[in-house]
Image (cartoon, rainbow, N blue to C red; front, side):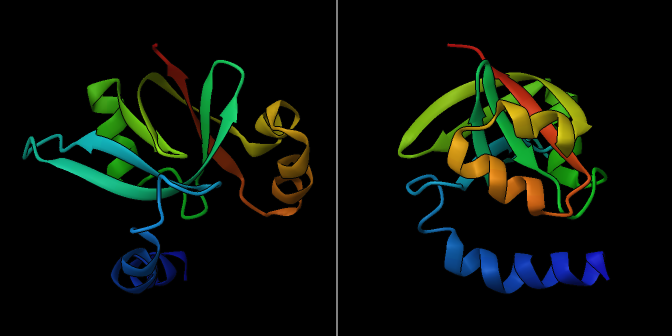
Length: 125
């Protein structure tokens, strides 16, 4: 079921969300280099600021190409609220570990979601 939802989102929802991603709160982009192709990809994600970087929710699980690409390259670039910055040191953690690090309005929202894990990346600049 998660794979079907991910395919639908990739084909339909991402086309709608992509123009807003990186410009409005929560909808962001993560730029990553394809591990085999070397192609630069820009994937819409749900991203939040944390003290030392960003946290990205993983509603479709950890085994996604873009997640593997970030690990292979040891990072990428985040586009959030109109700002682009380098991120590194990818780590997968339980979402419950991320919730206390979020800003007040997002703590309640993310705390209620049933997303088991998140990807945390450290901002380099």
